[in-house]
Image (cartoon, rainbow, N blue to C red):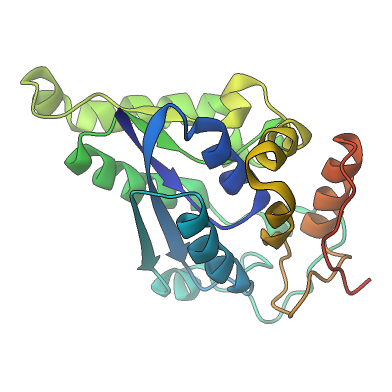
Amino acid sequence: MKKAVIVFSGGIDSVCAVSYLKSKYELYGITFSYGQKADMEITAAKYFAKKLGLKQHKVIDIGFMKDLYGDSNVLTSSKKKIPSKFEYSIVVPIRNAVFLSIASAWAYTLNASLVVYGAHTGDKHYPDCRPIFTKKLESAFNQGEIDGINSKLRKSLTIWSPYREGLSKSNLLKSGIKVLGDSIFKTWSCYSNKKYHCGVCESCNNRKSAFAKARINDKTKYLK
């Protein structure tokens, strides 16, 4: 079976992407601790890595990124308030480029042919989720390993996302719930770090909307 490395946050998008691909690929998960407020997602990632039978799961500490990011975004800053709808303050500068670079380095060593992250069609506000970005990054990475690829020591990588296939968050949910059942409600979407989802941040609101569009009764525990 072909190998794939997935950037695995423990949220709906990455967990459902695994559900979508697991019948076709041997999956290796990589989760990043980058100084985000919502470290509950790391707990969720560990749970779903076992539940979905990932071949390996690594949690990588890149907490130094929080110092580099400073107060540039609300997800790592202790000073900024998390908004209830999209504002550019939510965008963590080229976060996915950082994640995909490390994931791709691992993928080349595994001779994996696919690197995956959970960007979907609803992520149009985020430049590093768009397919045009993904394709350019993929080209750059393969150029960086071109000698190994040409000598058959490395496999050429494809960076795949639901967005590249035209899939929405609600599409992912429909796929995920078939595999996961009610455990899908243990995924973590919230930008805050409370015992339960806050229910008011932009990510919680997107979660609620996706379940509604998918016509799935949302059993997530929200504070509001």
